[in-house]
Structures are given as C-alpha cells and as structure tokens.
Image (cartoon, rainbow, N blue to C red; front, side, top):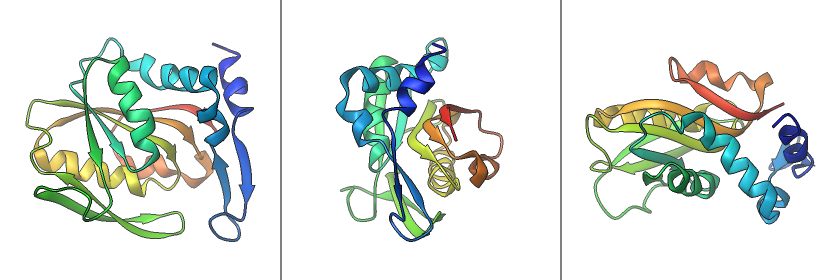
Length: 175
C-alpha cells in the first residue's frame, strides 16, 4: 500500500479561502466520485481495526456518515450517527465544541450505545479536534469504551490529536 497515499492525495483538491479567508479546504468530493479511490480510502481507514472487537462505528455529520457507514459494513458492526441539533427524534446527549473557524453543537441519542460496547469513531478530517472531542465526550457519557478514532485526513499542523487525550488515532493521510 505504499502507493496508496499518493494515489488518494491525487484525488483531493485544495480550495483556498473556503469557508473563509485563510483556510485551505481539503475537498474530498473528487475522491468520493472515484470508485477505486473511495474503496481504497475506506479500506485504509478500516483495516487497522479488522482484528479488534468493534461493536459500533460512530460517524459525525456529515462526511463521517459517508465513511462511517462503509467502515461499519466492512467491520460487520452497527453505525451510530452524531448529528447537528434538532435532527434526532429521541432524547440526546448534546455537546458544544470549537471548530477551526467557529463553534458548533452535536447530538447523539442517549440510548445509542451502552456500557460494554466498543466504539470506533470516524470522520473524514482531523483538524483542531473539536468535532471528535465532542464525539468522545458523548460516547463516554454512555459508558461505552472507545477503541480508537480513524480519519481519512489529518492536518498535523493544527495539532487536533492533542484534544483527543488517550484515544488511539489512525489517519490514512497526513498533511
């Protein structure tokens, strides 16, 4: 798989000044449109956990849904969505968190998991770590165990992994 990272990087384009000036957005839509690239990305994110017991994959809205459901299928486990406020119909845990360019709030159903469940957290991008730190907080409120977090892309210069504490982190691509 030594050629895998350059192949995936070739399918990711930089969009300068999006969503605001000074941000260089890593646009994965060309990768998502490429069947081989998408399959390779999912495999690179799922493979490190094939021998681990994972009961549930948690994916953060919205691109975490794309990779999370595919990884859940690859690992033969369930999927739990983490959504923006007001999108889930039952009682939720709610966490406000900081983004690279502001703040946001996420919610997860209170009964989505239980103590004893092993959870793999999934998102497309680890930047400042705010989104995943919020997911970690909600999962821990349920008493479930976090096996690890996996990302397609990690922007190392933003040091987001520092916000994730003792959670093992896997990133397929690092910038």
